[in-house]
Structures are given as C-alpha cells and as structure tokens.
Image (cartoon, rainbow, N blue to C red; front, side):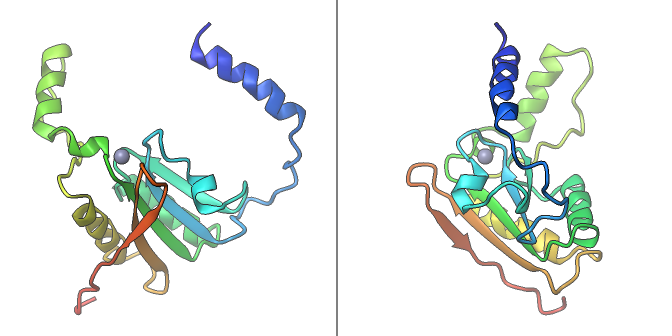
Amino acid sequence: MSIIEEVLAANEGYAGSFNLGHLPMPPRRKLAVVACMDARLTIEPMLGLKTGEAHIIRNAGGIVTEDVLRSLIISHYLLGTEEFMIVNHTDCGMMTFKDEELRKKLGQTTATPAVGLSFQTFGDVEENVRQQIQTVWSHPRIPKSILVRGFIFDVKTGRLKEVRAEKASAA
Ligand SMILES: [Zn+2]
C-alpha cells in the first residue's frame, strides 16, 4: 500500500468526526506564519494554534520568496492578517548543501540543464531569518503597520528563539 493510500484511509477517520465545517475563511487570530517545510516542525501545536486561526505558508528553508510575498499580500489584504511570523529552525537541510551542488546533480540526472536555478540555500540560520524579515519589511506592498518577527525553532528542545533584525533607517 502506498503512503497516499494510508493517509487516505486516515482521512476517512478524520472526516468521520469532523466538526469544523462552520469555520469562516479569515484566520481568527489574524496571524500568518512562514515556516520551513521540515517534517519535524508541526506548526499548529508548536504555536498553540487551532484550525482556522492562522495562515501557515511553508517551503524549503522558510524563505520569503516571490510566491510567499504573493500569499502574504493575499493574507493581509483579503483575509485580514496583521502579524507575520517567520520560523526557521536548527539543523535545517538548507544548510547541508550548496545551490551549485544540487544544480550539478540535476545536470547529471536529467536531460535539462539546471543553469540559473536558485534553491536559496544558506549557511547561517540567524542571518537567514534576518534576511527574510528584511525582505518583508522592504516590500512596497506590505504595510509598515504589520508586525514582523522572526524565530529559530530548536528541533531538539521544541523551543523558539527570537532573532531580531534592525530596521533600516531609510525605510
Ligand atoms: Zn528546514
């Protein structure tokens, strides 16, 4: 049995006792979280969030990409979120390889050359969080009134540590 078959069977049980069909679309706690896709991060229990309370936007590294910005803009303007939280973590896979290595690997295993592909790997998780905060702050479509804070989740202890970024004086 494939894993997808297994999870479909689990969904039967979930749907059997599902009672959240009344929830409205806008996140009740007006929070959007940008987090790494790492399987050891389960965002809702980590932050005490329930279904319907926050937007969770995830990708490899918890990077504020163009597509994450697209989601944040929709999250704020159409669905009313007012606080954005960026969550990276210790032992992130994005620190274990370099863009160039993966490009080379892809070049060897597929017929299509991987030139120009960016995976946005990083070497320093604190610096990476700061950079993601700056990317949100500096975006012309994200209002300055939105509270943006960044954190590193420790995969060994389950604890979040805040990373503070300096607001550029020109902003
Ligand atoms: Zn990660």
